[in-house]
Length: 128
Image (tube, rainbow, N blue to C red; front, top):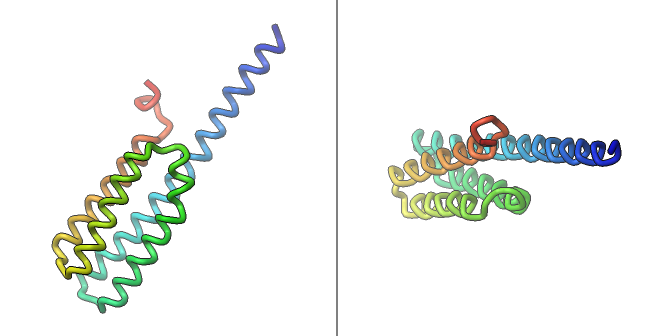
């Protein structure tokens, strides 16, 4: 009897610990990507050099790609693909020099990232 209880408690602790680790990584990743997107948005709004803005975009995409594999382990692939699609669209619009659509795509990307953070947060509404 004691053995089964110990195993059940150990499994619950491992699940909670794993959830805490993935939640922290998700929050850290989303915060980093959102900040970089905001930097790109600011540099577009301030009409900075195209090369500087392109460098910010490349850094942000590189950061996203480096985090993609880890996030894909525990986040639905469809959710990550939505973010990827918006980021690729943003880059395309930037290359076409359509600043309004670029900023719109940045805002959509930030919204989707915040949605991921909320969706995978460890809180009561998400449990039930």
